[in-house]
Image (tube, rainbow, N blue to C red; front, side):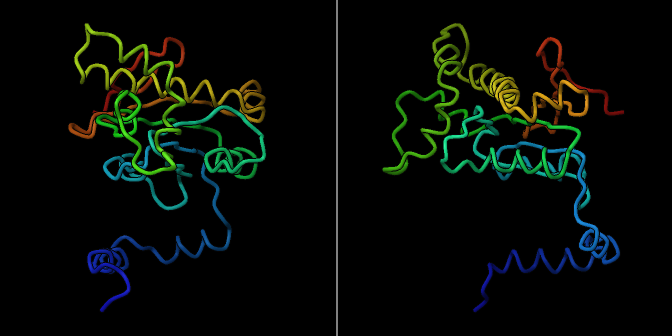
Length: 212
């Protein structure tokens, strides 16, 4: 009997025999991490930022939660995992970029659109979390001219703009962005095609960047 799933152990063996670089690891261990970019992504197993952006260890500081949401600044004494990670990235690591990256077929966004969804547990943690999108979900979900897939994609992209707006409610983010030392970005990844769509910071529209 092993103390980890065998598939994970096999993956670790492959990592040690190929992807692990001892010199880089020692340098990171001694000097600490200095990533320039914070990526706020969904915890969906199909959209890993490190893989999508072909990043090496130490290059990205990744914050993952259901539906890649950022709550508004609320210093109320409660537990705020996302806000804590954001605070650390901006104040301690002094990242230069924050990328909010959504993705297609997001289960969290689907839950936000489903007005008949039943709680998965008495705590209804997911329901409470995605209620951050309630105003937009009600507007998009009530559009009978759109198909279900169109409503889903629309809210996935609108949620990115929501999260960026909420980022700016954090004093540290607003101040540093105003000084030009921090830049906010939005992106949406299509897990079925591998396409990355980037948000225009001026218009909010999404477009595909050149990859050739």
